[in-house]
Length: 146
Image: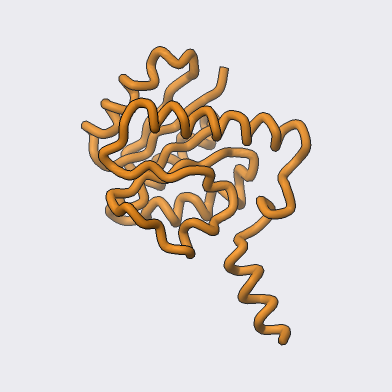
């Protein structure tokens, strides 16, 4: 059984996701913002984090960066209201999927299955080279050396 964390500033979205995942057999946690999500992770580290990108204060991208440093074995699935994801977001390590709001239950479950497989593979074989850092940062560092 995996632990799932749902992070969204909209209570109705969190409630809907919790209902859609309640029969998945996994332990469910929730947080209304990024700092609260980090507090939840300290208390009970989660395997998969579903996180809204746009939230007041610290956003989902900030949270993703914090999770990569502290919980590199956790899978992140970002939710957005925008249908195209900019490269600086899509290239982040550990971000496995994007849910475009409003998303279907099937999309949620499919992204969960992808994340759970990634978590299992990462625990078995360790992080893949491409999962060990921010690809955009690595690319920019290479450019500086030229």
